[in-house]
Length: 136
Image 1 (tube, rainbow, N blue to C red):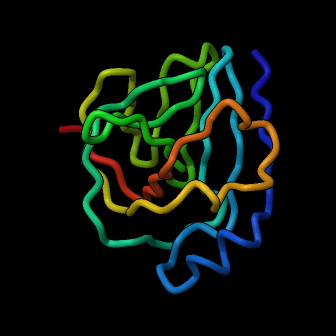
Image 2 (cartoon, rainbow, N blue to C red):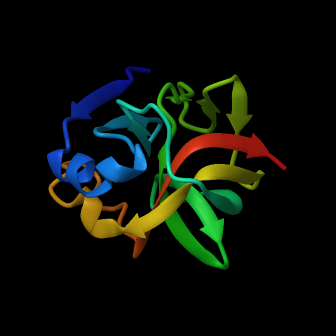
Image 3 (cartoon, rainbow, N blue to C red):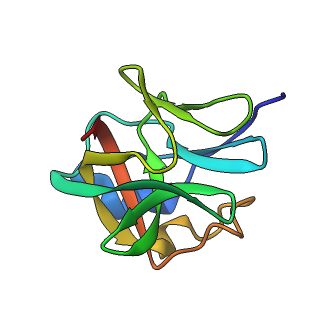
């Protein structure tokens, strides 16, 4: 039941996305064999509308968007349940696999997470950066 939170100051993410008020750091939460990426320093985000269905693939929390799995950097303050079967995002919204969501944020290429240790199984072509999540 130990939650391992490894906070990584990911300089490249901050530099590349600084103009978008995106997270300057990414934390990794591992629980129950599942991994969630969480923004560690976030004051807002990109303005794109992100739509998808919450999914876990290879033990990594993300969304299915247009039929493809996309890894998500969840909003700051997100926590993973002790068994790893649900996420609680800021505002108390609880997410489980299969829940449709709409969020504020945007998509970028996965190179933003290069060098982040412990997510080798969590590779996708795109990464969704969310600062706000609503359940549809």
